[in-house]
Length: 114
Image 1 (cartoon, one colour):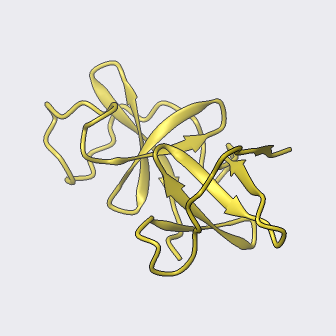
Image 2 (cartoon, rainbow, N blue to C red):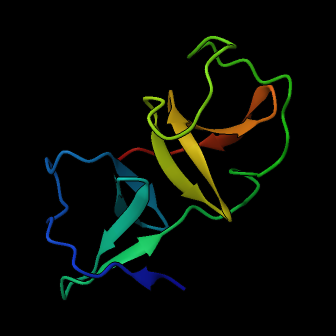
């Protein structure tokens, strides 16, 4: 069940400036660490990527994507977009989800960009 995002004055759509993600058969937009979906009536819902076989929430200590060095730490202001995934936040890096975990990043699977 999605929650509603109150007082949202930005209109999401093609060319709105936010990363578009294909999710559950529709397009959502990454906006300040949230995954927004605009309903036909203009209501903005907060969505999240589900934990699935394609997007697991498992530890992958051997993950080496080559998109950043081993010293990089994901978090607010790290330069990667935050993506709500299950009950946590991942970061979009080179088309897949990175999750900070101790001294490494876990690979939480691909993201389909619209």
